[in-house]
Image (tube, rainbow, N blue to C red):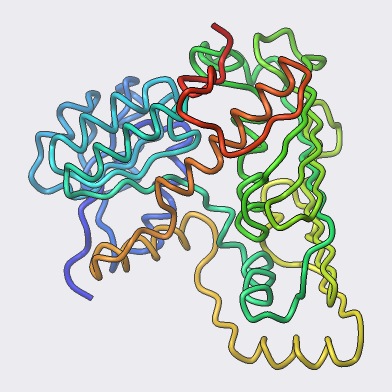
Length: 355
């Protein structure tokens, strides 16, 4: 397996979860440094990770020879500059969502990645939940049949204290609201199973907190395979849930409703016939799930770095999610159906945020 890969985690708010995940894989990763502009926060994180050093500047991370991977959990508005800085230093990048703030920027990341000889892995940790992986396995095995409809529901609660972090709830800092910062994982789970959308119509509004960005959204989607999908998202639900349902010709698959763990078990898979049940049971004999969540994504990333294969989530995957976001915002702002893919000469190619 080789020596553990040296990694640094930058941004220790969201980054706490990343740090914990690396700790679960000591044979694969070694946390060399933790970094945050809050010196006290960095120091406390280093104390929880014996052998790591606390730093306060990304440049300090980039200057170290014992770091192979830099994990960015910084505010979204800084991602593009930070990715460029890390790649220029000759290190691989792991970056939280949203990767960047426009299709133009994600295309720039692709160019930077290609010229650097290093890899950029966006975070979509919900892909690795065992329940979603089971559905993905059945689809890839040809057991599910064709898809008719899908539904996605993200009903979470965010109160005023959540927005006490200055960049949250702003277009400049967060790049969007419930769609960008909360439902993007659920959107990725949809397209991970179904594939891309072809037509999008959306409505968004701000009803829960006095913020710049949207905190409620509803969308109607026609997917490229011809199936239909709905998406509803809010940050004003007293009961927090996330739910996916897929209705195929040979089976239906529905997630549990745990708000932040819905891609894991339990999922309910219902066959349409005894023959479908037999096919499901046969396919499941070959199902070999790995770790879930961040641990699952990082474990697969370590495999890809050692083999030279593509990372488990690629810049192209992030681009697909950002293109969907762009279409949703354009549709809601202009009140029109938006066709995908969006061409480079589209007015929103350089950003979905209000000008």
